[in-house]
Length: 340
Image 1 (cartoon, one colour):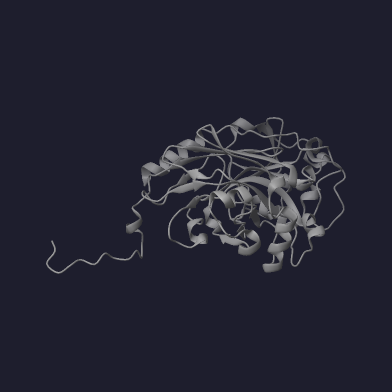
Image 2 (tube, helix red, strand yellow; image 1 turned 90 degrees about the horizontal axis):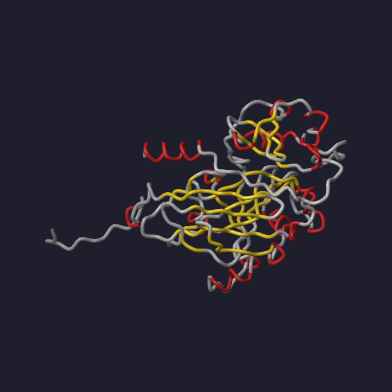
């Protein structure tokens, strides 16, 4: 165990390069605050990418640098991280260019990337939300029949982290997904108003083990929800239904799609989820995966790239994997009398 943790720390120290796609649409008047007027000026020229780095610092990434805006975030350090505090306070619209002028900046390559939301209130998943994935899994139902599911928030890791395979004899698949970050409390929100409740978007992976356990369990193992590296505010992506998503394993493309092919688009997902449960600021919704899911193995590198957002990269390790029959609570094999 100690060797694995040391290896994980070393991988983080290596600072996996952060690739940001800064072609995120036209500059807008500012970052939309929750339920308030828009900010007076856009942050750093209108390209708004929030990044959590080093020891609980919140930054704005722009053109290869990150500006530390932690001093403008209300409250002190908390398990949810600085972006969660910003969302809870509803003060993102106050981070205007004039306020961050003169704040310290560093090269992006020098910082240690953390999960943007290390402990979200809810991690919501959207099963079978692409027709091609429905076909490849021989599913008879889609999200319209299945609804949504929940993942453990303790499964979140960040860019450059390590996915730990739970079992040595059960397949674990990668599933690249556009991920939504909720910005305003939502309950019974109609579809036309749903995007008003979205704070931003990030890259995500919904790692899944193919075992006999319940869907939520199979997707909730520690490290099974990589997110990041940045959250791009919703005003930079006014049309989340026209993004390209590519997922690679060891550099080879496994998944490629457009979010235009989602069965439930972002607005429909937010509306539906809010009809089931109250959505709080900082909750995240994984929007579903397209065809091309496949097994990952020890030593693999998985990358999810989404246009106008960037690229999330994680490693895979089997250092803690065990045979499925050795999991806690597994049925015991009956031994015949007289057997050795």
